[in-house]
Length: 277
Image (cartoon, rainbow, N blue to C red; front, side, top):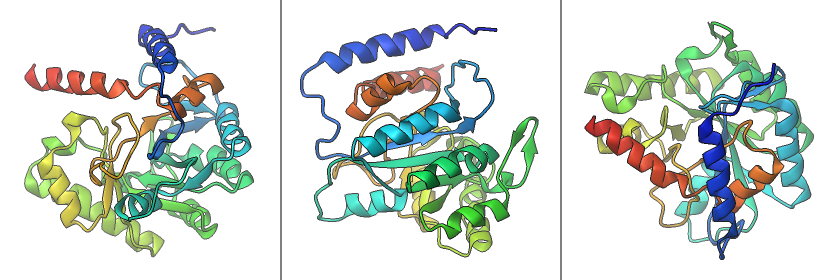
């Protein structure tokens, strides 16, 4: 059965096409882009609104495109270190991240990342590791350890149970951040320095959440707000670009060039309207 694309997708593609025609587009101009995925599946993909799934075959095309076009992958921690340093941001560096810690990241993404010798960061929802939520499975600590042994995979924190942190009281907020960090460190034997806000839009974190993340000992935090990161970007408001089934190679190239960066304006407006309403 063929599924129609949500109207949102037609709008996104049309707007990105117009944006791509504007002068000054560059795949790297003193900035670094962080891509983020969720599920990497070998099952048929429903073209869903939230863009949570990427077919394994398409993910391999993305990896092949990066390799053939001279991109170098770095981890989220390396992104933080680079932005905090006096060093110039090198051209054609990209960071691959995955949110939540789904089992299909191990089954489907891991072999492809290994094939191309790519680095990646997986942000774990610590309370979900080894569990199952309906049809959705999460990686086990054994599988996480196997990936970590390769030396190219970093595991960051995506909270304890993936709640909207801005809506929590002080004690709950501390538990979601600090307990999750400790669980991941205890089970991996490695320090965790990077954090990704659950949901990641403007209404899912605020200065109170940022302060709590900083106090927990993280060196940087990533949002889901579209755009590139420069030396001026706040280290606890780092931007990322969602990648999914929508991003066939033409759209993937546009994402790397910044043709979707305008989407952060929509995200800001949507978040403000939701807060008011």
